[in-house]
Image (cartoon, rainbow, N blue to C red; front, side):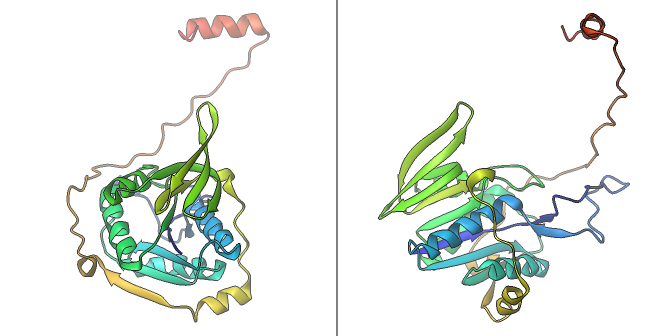
Length: 248
């Protein structure tokens, strides 16, 4: 069985995001870029399933310019067997991403697709759901535990009311949450070995994907500055202040 894992290049979560002065985008000049944390968890889970004998191959995929090869090499260093870059100069939105993943699934014959539940840059949380719909296969989102048994996957999901456990037939799409696992630390020998692992490059045109229906972001702005707080003497003063502000 092949597992396909999508990873996205994003601004590292430890970096404070800065908006360009003209509001045209986010300043990435000299900024550390990393694998989206949720995608890193998805890759770790795929590797654990393979190491447990539940899968034969883990293929890591990223969509973007040649700069994403850095993140793909990180995925290979973690232990992925192969990497695929879908080269494009455009910033694709969820529907186009889902269509691209579908073409890769059909091309590779993957039986399981693992994705992060969302990317920390746009927070859409849509690609996995759209891929499942286009593929006409089951989905299990926000997974905190995944267990494969033959042709089914038992997935524990994090929902508003707590935890929910469902079973889905494979092939399927699973999006992962933070508490699923702790990604492994990449060591220098693994980084060196990753340079010899195969990294294929294809284009959207070769996959037969047409980008359409793109939304256009007209302006970026940082969050409004937080208002300065006040100190209160006791609970009564706190209640009075909340009433004055219309919060009670």
